Length: 354
Image 1 (tube, rainbow, N blue to C red):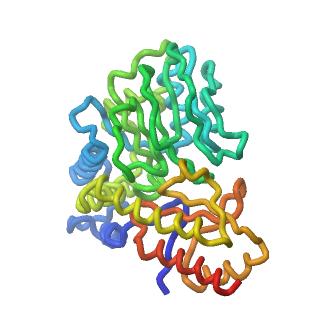
Image 2 (image 1 turned 30 degrees about the vertical axis):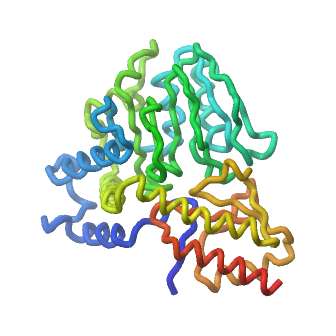
C-alpha cells in the first residue's frame, strides 16, 4: 500500500529525488564511487555544491543581488545563535509566534538586549500578531515565517529600515515573496528542501562585520563564505539530495509554479475542515499555513474511528504536536494533491460513519 507522508519533518521528497539519490549511493554519475565516500574536495562534489548554491539563489530571486548561499550544519537551532553572534551588538527585535521563535529569542538574549515586539502566546500562538512597531535603533528584526507546530504563516512582512532576518525552515521555496527584503534567510533542509543534516543560510554580504565581539571561527559567517561552505567537511549527501530537490523544483517551473499547487492543496484541506462539523481548525483563518494545517476533532469520542480510517488509507504522520493536540497535515512541496484529497475524503468518511 502506498503511504501518504504528512510528517512535519523530515519531509516528503519527490520520488525522482529518492531514485536519483539511491543510485548515487551506489555510484555517483558513473564515476565508480558512492556519493557517501567521495571527497568533499573532489571536482564532482565542488560542482554539486556550486550548483546547489546557485539554484538556491536563483529560486529565491536573489541571484546577482549581493547574496551568498551557504550549506552549513547544526540545523536552524544553530542559526538561532549564529544570527545573534554575527549581528547583535546592542539590541535586537524579535516577533514571537511560537516554539521556534521563542527558542531563537532565548539564544539571542545570551548576547544582548532583546525586544519582543509582539507575541501570540496569549492564544497559544494560533495567530500572527500585526500592527507592531520595530525599534529604529535595533540591530536587526527577526521573524519565523511559518510555524509548523501551530499551523500559522506570516502573509505580509513589515517594511523596515532595520535589517530583517527570517527562519524559513518550513516554507522556504513554497511561495513567491520578495526575499530581497531579508538580510539573512535560514532554513533547516528537512522541512521542505532535503534530508536532515544541512541548513541553507542565505546572507546579504554587506550586513556582516559590524559587531565588536571576536567571533569563534565556526560561528563566523564570513569564514564560511570565504571557504564556500567548506570551512569544515560539509554534509555531502544532504547537500547533494537538496541539490536534486532544487533541480526538481526548477524543472516544475520554480517557486511560482509550486505556489499554485500549494495553494490548491491548502484549499482542499481547509475547505473540508470548515465544512465538516466533526472538525475545527486551530489557527486563525487569515493566518493559516499553506504548509501545515492544524485541526482538532469537535468530539473526541470519534477519535478511534478516525484514526482507524486514517491508518487503513495509508496516511502517515498527521498526529498533532502535544502543544496543540489533534492533527497536523504537513503539505510540503513534494506532497501530491491526490494525497491531500485522500485525507479530505477520509474526513468525509468519518462524517458518514459518525
